[in-house]
Length: 290
Image (cartoon, rainbow, N blue to C red; front, side, top):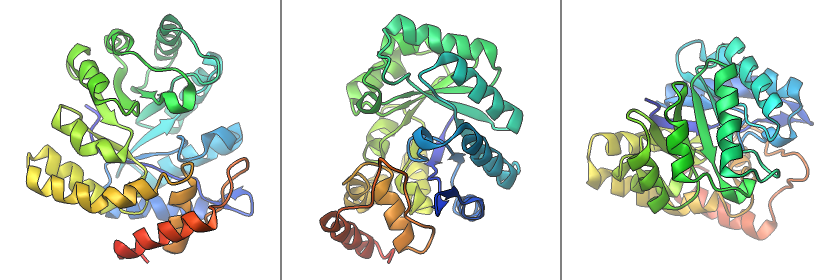
C-alpha cells in the first residue's frame, strides 16, 4: 500500500542549473521531519522544463541521498508512451521505489487510449506505478471505470487524485481492486479524502511544512478527527496561498523567504506578482515561517 505524507519535491535551480546541493539538503530535511516519501520530477518539480539528462540527475541524486531511509517515487510520465517507458526504466535502474505517471497531456487520448498507455508501460517496466489524474493540467479526466480496470494490473498500485471531485474519488475507491491506494493530489482535500478511504497525500505544502503535513496524515490514520480538523484548518489559508499563482511559483518563493533555496523557476513560469507576494508573506508570517 502506498500511504503517508509524501512531498512533491521542488527542483531547486541556481543560475539556470539544477542545484544538487540544495536537493541533498531538502531530502535530509524531509527525512528528519517524518515525510513518508520523496516525489521528484513531478509537476511541482517542473518536470516539463527539465531535459532528460536533468530529469535523470534529479532522480539519481534523490535516490542516493535517500539511501533507503525514505521511499522515492520518481515522476516518469510523458505524453509519449515510448518516452514514458524509458523514463520509468531509468527510475527503476536508479533504485527508485515506485514511479508516478501523469495522464498523457495535450494528446487528449480516449479512455481506451489511457488504458493501453499505462498497461504498456506497466508491462515493460516491473516497478510499482502510481497513476496521476489532474485534468486541469492534462485536459483529460481519468474516469473511475478506467482506473478500476488498471488497478487489476499487478504493478499498478495507486492513483494520485487531483480532480478535486470527492464523489469521483469515492467511486475509484469503491470500484478498484483490493489494496489499491487512492492518494490526494490536493492539500486542501487530504482530510476529506482520507475520511472516505484515501491513504495519504502527495503534498505541495509539505515542501515548507513537512512535519505538520505528516502530523495531519498521522491523525487521519489514527482516527483522531479532532486533531486532524485542527491541523486542516490551521493549514487551510496557507494551502490556498500555495496556489495563488501557478504551482510551484508560490512554494518556491516561500522557500526562498524561509532561506531554504532560490525561488528561481524556468520560463514560461515567472516570479510572483508583487500583490500576490504580499499575500504569501502574510500567510507565512501567520504560520511563523518567516
